[in-house]
Structures are given as C-alpha cells and as structure tokens.
Amino acid sequence: MSIIFDFARPADLLPSTRQRAEAWRTDVRLRLPSGRLVAAEPPGGFPAGEVARWAFTQTVAPGEYAVEILVEDDVVLGAGVVVRPEPVSRWLPARRGGEDYVYPVDGATGGFGSVEVFEALTDGDAREDLIADLSFDQDGLYSVYHDEATDTNLVAIHLDADGRYRSWVGYTADGEVACFFTDFGDLEHLSGDPQNPFQ
Image (cartoon, rainbow, N blue to C red):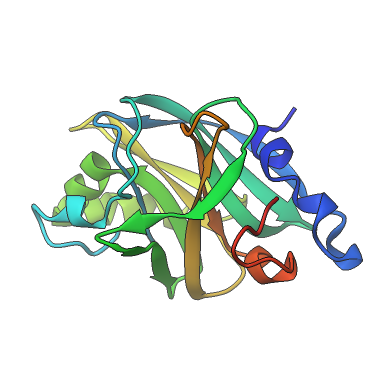
C-alpha cells in the first residue's frame, strides 16, 4: 500500500480526467544524517558552505526515509519523502528562510536530498559525477546519485516540463511531520482548495 497516496487521497479530489493518478513507491531510502531536507533541481547550484539556507525549515529525526512518486499515465504529478506511516491531518506550505518553499526547474528534473549531499555537490568533481549518472539513467521516473565521500544520496525526479514547483508538509493529528511533498502537477489548484489542497 502506498503511503503518500493514502495520506493525500489525491484521486478523490482531482477532476475526473485525473482519476488514473496513482502513487508508486521507489526502492530508495533517502539518507538524512542531520534530519535536514532540501528540494531542488540537481545539482542545486548552491554556494559552498551555504546549502543549509535552502533546507526546509521543518526538520525531522536523522535517519533514512522512503520516497514515493505520484504519477498518471507515466507523467509525474508529485513526489514526496515519507517520514511517518500515519494519516495526514493537515497540510501546510513548506517553508525555508521565512518564505514558502518554491523552487525553479529548467532542466526537467526535480529532486530531494540532504543538506550534506547538496553540500558535497558544490564540488566540481562531484557535480560531474552526478551529471554523468543522470545522463545515463533517464528512462525511468527517477534516478539515484550516491556520494561516497559523505555516504549520502539524492533522488532525481524526471519531469515532463520545467516550471516553479511548490512543496508542502503533511502533519499528523499530533502535529508531527508525516511527509514532505512537492507538487509537480498543479494539484494545489485542481483540488479547488489552494489553502488545503490534499484534504
């Protein structure tokens, strides 16, 4: 059973033309050594030593977390990092640096990774390794990059279009973070309730 799909219940909310949407769990366990997550187009292009400024304000316990992708007819509508296998009671816009978490994509690739892996990618050699890995692995919905120096990984989500994409945080009834979710399919507006798009 797919956790994000059950959390968000998007098929109950989308127009009839989107009723074929389904979530697909990857085999990735995303490593977050400090519990700080970054969503960005790989490799990020962040200044060395400053990646933490682009991390989600919301943090989680250090660990490894499942990644799921919401798709319809092989088109990615969204992707998320599952923190707790509990129902989402409330969705709020993800935040970073006092602003809503929205990031630009101009190479048809979104992504999730730790502060540590994106910091490693400020190194030129690591960036070249990432680009080489992604260039040979474009057939599926996602690719995985592993940085040996930090033993961290990054999940690159292959998209059909560029744009600016908003992220959300789902909370349990107890106010704990259940998941992070990036909306690549304009689900926020299709749901009819932009303040609480997945409930």
